Image 1 (cartoon, rainbow, N blue to C red):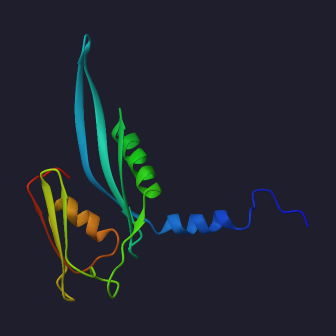
Image 2: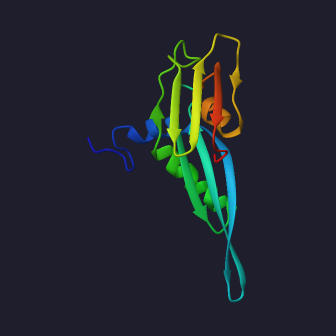
Image 3: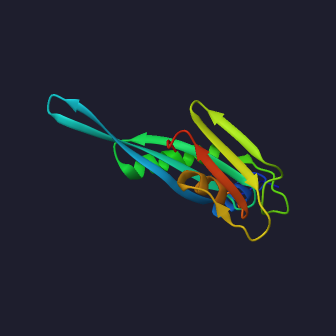
Length: 145
């Protein structure tokens, strides 16, 4: 009747399976410098988007002294903050949308089959990772990813 060590209702195996099919994309790396008495201290900030190609997506921002550590932190945060995006026919958005944050504006439009992802840099990563195949998008006002 006693369970074997490390086994708790099979939850760990299911979580590992979910993590295995996750795709991550590096959107941007920013290098910042702090000028100190002895010279410059460099730091790095990474922006990463993760998704499962089935409608789940998340983004994360990580900062560290080295690039790989910043990417790892951003990826871990992105996996924690994943949300589900409903997709029509598993390939496009249900309806058009507009978003605004400060001076940056985003326009998303559902597209017919075969259109592909028509979007610029950071938006392309955010749309491809959850599995959106057909969409037209435009980013206006700000180039900040």
